[in-house]
Image 1 (cartoon, rainbow, N blue to C red):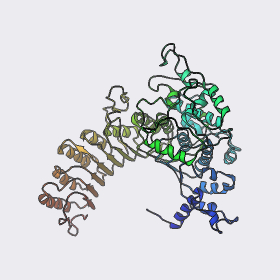
Image 2: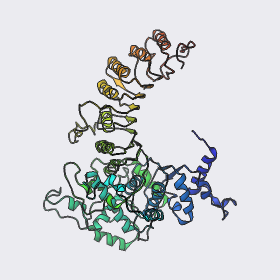
Image 3: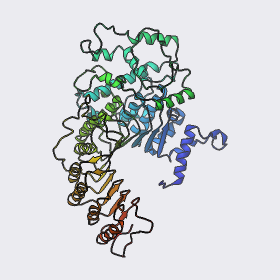
Image 4: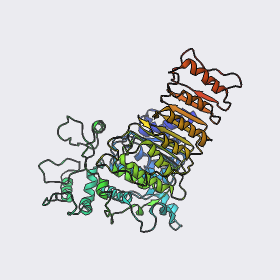
Length: 612
């Protein structure tokens, strides 16, 4: 933990505890003084703020008594984190909208990170993404922004604010943009319907989003899928429209209850999750968001398994079949109605599964997010959406002023082999400086060769050579299985500026393939300074290791758990020491977990070789 000022760190922690209520201010006479505000006093020291669970603290920060606290945070806060978010009500999302607008659009927040969100709420996730990308549209019934009025007073609107993403006045919409437009429209209509109600804790679910769309007079399934092309059997009656059911439900009670099974047929709601096995019956929600209900939801959301035959989500309903068809979402408000403000430069998503609608929205925003400098997508279950991500990154790279220089991508599975995915990323982002990519398991379900799964687009996978890039740091974590050395060599040959290379769990078909990689490094990567190998079986590659130690450009080499001394340790150790003595540029050699033995150490003579 690198803490430069412990006083500031303490004040930051104190601010968070007071905001969440874990510190009882009333118990201390000095803290409850009317002339003293604990939040205001500590807010100027806050550099990082974490929002958890049910968005605790967002409503308090946007309240009028804490206006000066929020203004101070806007100038001091740089990192905003979200951890373990649960389902939230419309009032909390409205408060979060105002908070993000103040901290990002009119503040100094440059990094937004999301951690451990097993089942993201679509409306809340899209809200965080769009606000982080710099888009702002006041919510229904929300107070106007005072800072926006002051900033816009006396100046004409600038066309450049929205031209980067929206293009001309009548832009050409791709599938991702149409989907984002429909999602934003559904969220606004849902909020407009629920804000006047007396129950503030009504949860925003996919069913409520679908009902709000149908209540507005727009049946997306009916419009986007005509009877001739629909999947219904001939002569099948369509279910009655949702407004009648919605009005009857709202007149009977203000709390949300499930319709009985014997009622009239309703449009089938989009499933949010599958409950754990063994639970019988439907759970009736009682009361406005009790703790037991939240705990129940959280536990069984995590424990639930996704169904293979899961229904089409609202994003796919809004946009129809994304591959091959061209559904029209005209008439729905899109991002053109939003104002463009300052956006963040670092976005991190850790263990946040991305549904189709969320991935489409993210890809759409990324295609013109020119202020973004670092992107981290860790274990998001992208699957085949990785192709849309590559298309959006390619579009972003073509934007004037693109600043993306670091990409960290890791997942359990990938529809592409990791080396082909690396080649595609390097081709899409030639100005990238740092690339970290990891795939834990080879995917069978998402393999393009499996029948029923669409193959990758031809412009992503190609045999043409990779153009020269600006890559300086490359980290790769491989799944089990032999990797084709020529593909890795093609990436290395195009990365002449590479200074640091790390290979984790890489397996090659033969020692000759590993030697080919080392020879490529020696000939094409003359700027390479640091080289790291982890969890690789190099017991049969002792001659290649000696060849590597003679590389006069390397300064640090790490062999961790590579089984170097598993064979011929008595003969190989002196050879290794002799090779190190002849290399005057090598400054560090690390050999953890290589069965070196307790009595065997590598020494150095003064001025003749490196130490460990």
